[in-house]
Amino acid sequence: QWWAERFDFDEFKRGLVARYRVFNENPNGVQGLVFNMRKPPFDDIKIRKAVTYLWDRNKFNEKLFFNSYMPEYSYFPGTVYENPNNPKIGFSLDSARMLLEEAGWKDRNSDGYLVKNGKVFELDLPFDGGPGQERYLTIFQEDLKKAGIKLNLKQIDGTTRFKLGNERNFTILVTAWTGLRIPNPESSLKSNTADAPNTTNWPGIKDARIDELCDLYNKTYDKKERIKIVREIDGIASNYFGYGFGWYGPYQRIGFHNKFSYPEWILPRTNDYLFTCILWYYDPEKAAEYDAVKSDPNKKMEVKEVDQKYWLKVKEQEEA
Image (cartoon, rainbow, N blue to C red; front, side, top):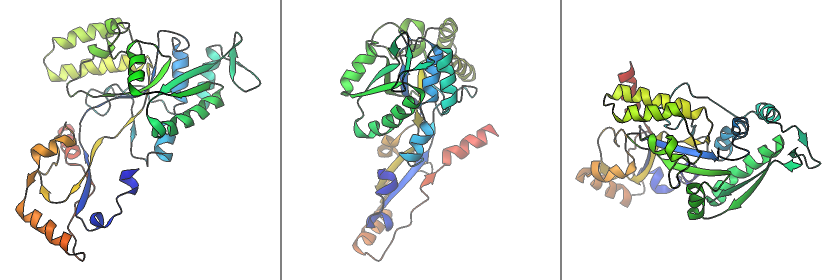
């Protein structure tokens, strides 16, 4: 919202303050809904898929996020390690209803909620993101109700949410992990991390082939082979639907006083905005121009395009 609506002040209009979206390959982590596969109802893949179908990321993006993000479909989104054949699930109320019926949730009570064996289909979702997160979770709550699922939202603090996940004491949570430049799939996807507390395998994925691939990955040094291995791991894990994947921005957003100089690529290929303090430098000529424009309201500074795609062009050349 700040990016879309708050860059309308005089210093920005005159180029004293600039902003870039630097499209690069800084790795993004998994973000979105995490389902506890160890216990009902998410021990049933039909239920996990059904709820994923009701997670309307495109609606959130359009109504709340100024169309700023891309949907995730991977444990390694936007990187060479993402398996391009992963399921591409979008919102579908009909698909969700069909899967719920197949899982035995066919009848509804007078309030419109699904009932099986006298029990209402009800989920508790603790969250810690405040009003910003509550906006899209309320939309999710409404869409779940259309399918007959009752969702109870409960705001908690971040420490409590993390404790619930680490102790596997949850049914469904919203979470977000940072990405790694060199993936380490065994730390979050190997079977021995599923039930051990304090690991990042919150969904509880256990798969013998993933275990084999993790062991192979650890003794493989050829990068192309390592990419193939992680892509296979990604494909297997994604088809468990342990996450209802969220969204990510394939860029670094930066706003700054326009008095510095920097390389053509602005930021490194696989790093974030923190590298400005390493790559950028003091430019006496530009600083003098900045001071001159700042002291004269009739002057402007030249500013480059907002979207900077140096690294995308490099990637295209490499793949050509």
